[in-house]
Image (cartoon, rainbow, N blue to C red):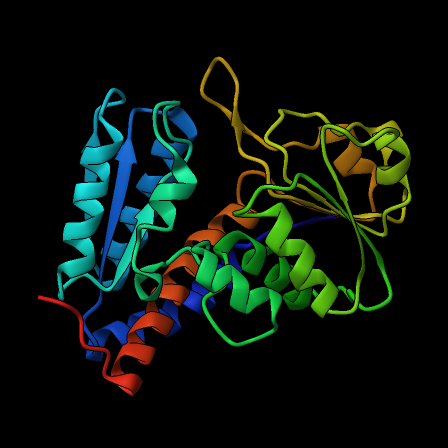
Amino acid sequence: MLIYGREIRDKLKAEISQFAASTPMRMAIIVVGEDGPSQAYVKGIVRFAEETGIKIDVLNLPAEVNESEVLRIITELNNDSEIDGIMLQKPLPNQIDDNKLVNAIAYHKDVEGIHNYNLGKLISKQAGIQPSTPKAVIRMLKEHNIPIEGKNVTIVGRSTILGSPLAVMMTAENGTVTVCHTRTKDLKKEIFNADILVAAMGRLNFITADMVREDTVIIDAGINFDQNGKMFGDVDETAREKAAIASAVPGGVGVITVAELFDNLKQICVSKQKNKIAFPQ
């Protein structure tokens, strides 16, 4: 059975729209280069902003831009009191240290929840901004009444924006978590043992039917494009058909992720109002 994220996205959108009607919000996105999946994701973000009445600034920079120039732009956005949230779209060109730039963003404007400060709060189980795609994965499972507690959860991928923080969040939900990566010795065995499998590696149709059980729940968080520009996940169609439940691609985790990004922006603005954070001028 395929599960979708549109109804979940629309529910979040209604809440965010209502908040935006009384509280102006503004987010800036820095995009370096013209990576295909990145462009598609950013277009979805811009569309969501337009539909909810939220101001958004997309700063498109050439692929050959110097790291120092991106740092300068981030500093300007940090100091701009009208900008509530900042996002640095990945992947970035090789000449740029993405971790350095992410942590140059003011932690209270880190709309993706991947600044070291926010990841530290996540690990220490403190309330704060959480990474948007892991939030989308957890919400999709809960909204479809799929229990996590006591389940063997296998995450394929260990990125700082998805796999690693999701492992922490799944553990907090009392799942028994295994994180797989390129050095995993018997990946097929680890995947086959999963009650809940989260595919987050960014490899088109990598997971096939022989790797999954018939009672497995698959959440496909991969975004890949073929030579014709058609979107696919990390999970092959035959594996989705074999599994008990599988998320659709497109129309699954991705559409919720965009909404979760704006839910983070909303949380930032709520915190700003509550704590009366004084931004530098």
